Length: 65
Image 1 (cartoon, rainbow, N blue to C red):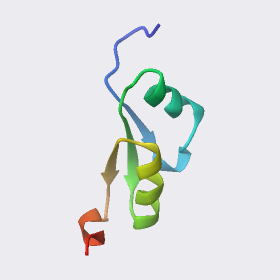
Image 2 (cartoon, helix red, strand yellow; image 1 turned 90 degrees about the horizontal axis):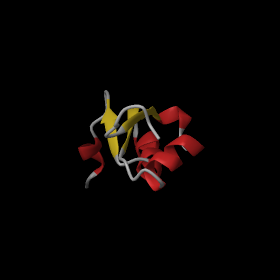
Image 3 (spheres, rainbow, N blue to C red; image 1 turned 120 degrees about the vertical axis):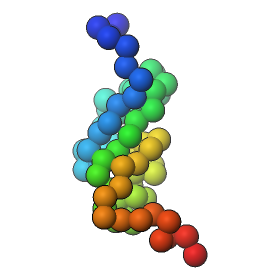
Image 4 (cartoon, helix red, strand yellow; image 1 turned 90 degrees about the vertical axis):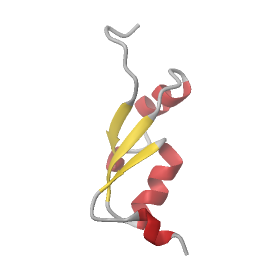
């Protein structure tokens, strides 16, 4: 049991995937946010591992043709 209720987890994109993030998403059914995504390659990586993404210096809308 957790000492305090949590509502989401924010994780560095370079440390994904990992067992903790999988546990949070699959067992606790909580959203995971990745940070900081700066290019299309990291966005693809994040899309596979998290529910929401924090972008910096990169506009994902530019990928839409």
